[in-house]
Image (tube, rainbow, N blue to C red):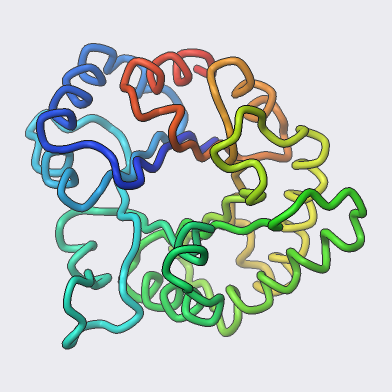
Length: 249
């Protein structure tokens, strides 16, 4: 089953979140299809989604979590807190976390291990910083990230893990990466994940993220090697998210 979703980053207040939810409800028939739709809003908007009595069949997640279970970490949120409020997944390792907060791959690895302990689905962002047409070099760059991210990861029977291939150079741009370029990278990610995780890797889906919009989304969702799409700014308006979802159902 394909995954189709969005992270709002640091956007939307309570009023605009309510408007977004109302727009989704008017198109609720879309979300009954055999697709895993997901939304990752800011922490402040999560209760409006999760406490709604007429909650839509959408998977909800958090944009970050701390690597420790609890403690004196002012301003942070734990895996237990995320799980207790009703989230199913957590976004980890986004390029912006590296760029602005200096998060290192080894730290992301600790977060992944803790997320799995609390039965959250880690959605792990991975990708090279610059366009790398030499596939051998690109594989080495991806492998280096996976070696750290997946270190000591043992998926149990019902555990699930998602990798989002997001080449940094395609994030927030006007043009997505070439589908063939992405397919090569994603196939390698799947093959290498299987090597790292063994037989459990059938529970690892690999999505593409980076400048997805209404015009190009089908190129990626129709590709049998790509397990879905992960979007950002193109879905900040509910109307755009709905249009994109309608294109692929």
